[in-house]
Image 1 (cartoon, one colour):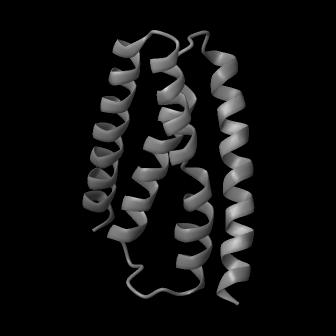
Image 2: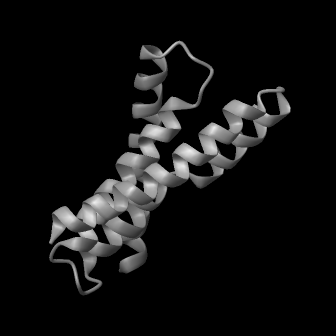
Length: 118
């Protein structure tokens, strides 16, 4: 049954990430991967809030939202690919900035979420 919750949550998370990415990309005219950064920071904030709150046991909500939805909403593969693209297109300073921002902001967002969730 948990696989079903993970699958449904994962599908909805992927669709949500895609929709939010399209929306942010339409608002932004930069080649900087802003949409992926925002999605990953938001996902980390949400996972911090959830894990800091009442979810102590791994029930259906945990499998649906944490593993399924947020697992597919956030995207390490896009982050990695975009980082390589930035370095490959002779923009190593922007690539380094993207990596540093992503790592620091996602960890900080998770910490803030955990703190607010308690």
